[in-house]
Length: 195
Image 1 (cartoon, rainbow, N blue to C red):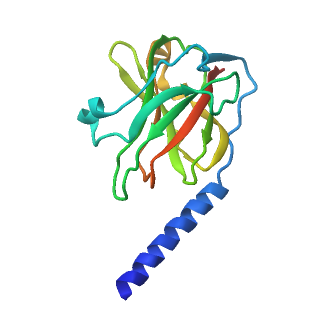
Image 2 (cartoon, helix red, strand yellow; image 1 turned 30 degrees about the horizontal axis):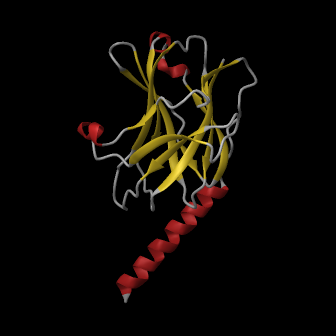
Image 3 (cartoon, helix red, strand yellow; image 1 turned 180 degrees about the vertical axis):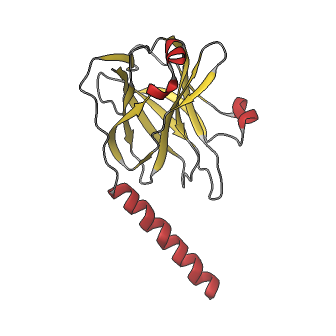
């Protein structure tokens, strides 16, 4: 009986925590400066999910697919649909969706993207990049707990360093650990840089 009470209490606390997290989400401020488009998914799909080929970097990834879709979009006709599998409870499994493309982000301070979470659970989103021929890992400090709904997220890339910003080789959107209680999807659109 005591075990059942503890289990019930733990479940209630988890649900309350998720509800508080969803209610307390504050939309970041989008800069009012000059912008440059990275990807709006109107010209096709150049993004991939990190799955079994990334197992050398830790636990298997929850990222399954990355498709261009018309199911949701914030601009134009298309967005990127990112699919993830259920992670289980006690796990650090992450999901990564990435695009390889030589980009020069010199002079820019932020990456901004529109994200839609159609699911009834909160998951995490973070941005990273790999830069130069050494594939230097650069990761934003922002770590969003994303509730259901449409959000515009802002990531500060100023700490990546000038040498890295000159030679961005890969951009990565990450669900960086944490529980995904069910398989699900989220959508990304209008990925852009701001000064």
